[in-house]
Length: 421
Image: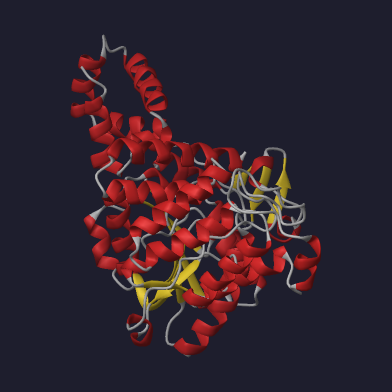
């Protein structure tokens, strides 16, 4: 039997684009599960798979590799605390805040949400958190609330002292955090989620879409949008977002939060703003150049290196100009963001991030041909720029270039895994 039957099964059941994780990894999982059942080959294993819901789940578990830690993308949690206070004021004690973490994996994210809100002085009775994941094994581990060293990363670990007990096996999260979170086994593609339409004030769905092909990404985004209250906020991962503007979402304007809301009536009358996909302040994504090191000298014939005196005379350094681009895009000021990009390119050597911004601006304004040109320039300068890879892949997919899109998606996944490590 051809492995493609199994690839199709995984796409139908969980929306997985096999190329995003690599066909070899899925093939390895098939061999492992086949051997575990004592199947005589793939034909035999296929028959057993069709007859056993338990084995179907076991195969899904074998290809899911959860990678998470507490307070991943910390700026998102800082933004949540501020937005939660504003939302509570709007609700005027009519009901508690409702939050969703999907996928919740082994629990680090929903427990981080609870700790962030408690640290912000929000009473436990004022918020409820649902955590949902397709993996029963992950949900079971989350329910235990026991974590090893790998779940705690970065230098700011004060929360561990406040909300965990140290035991021989690691650290166990306090009951006052766990009781804020209700865990479920569930699939974002399950039609039953329609019953929760408009339920959540805040939805966290991060680093899930990169595993899907473009049509599945669109389905998932529509589901997430329906789950949100009309005044709700959606938090996504930094390498996601190219579909948001087209689905009527705009950035909230908090830098590095990766948070989006529905367009208001006035915003609907103007071109969709650029979707800001930013870098982590502590650990930049692979391929991104930290802003505290000198910019590279120019490559190829993209323009001359500016005279030092001309650069100093501008009064706005490279880092400040990049921040200005992000600020304008976050606020939905597309033309100002584009002007800042052009100013940067006149004053400094070529930058992959600036060309990426220009691509995203063209993308959201509907100029797909020019968007491709800019994305390709970004990848010329930084071949593993993860967001340029993801967005160019989406454009190629829309144009019917399936092979090209899959190659770029695979490169983006490899870049993302390297960044997590």
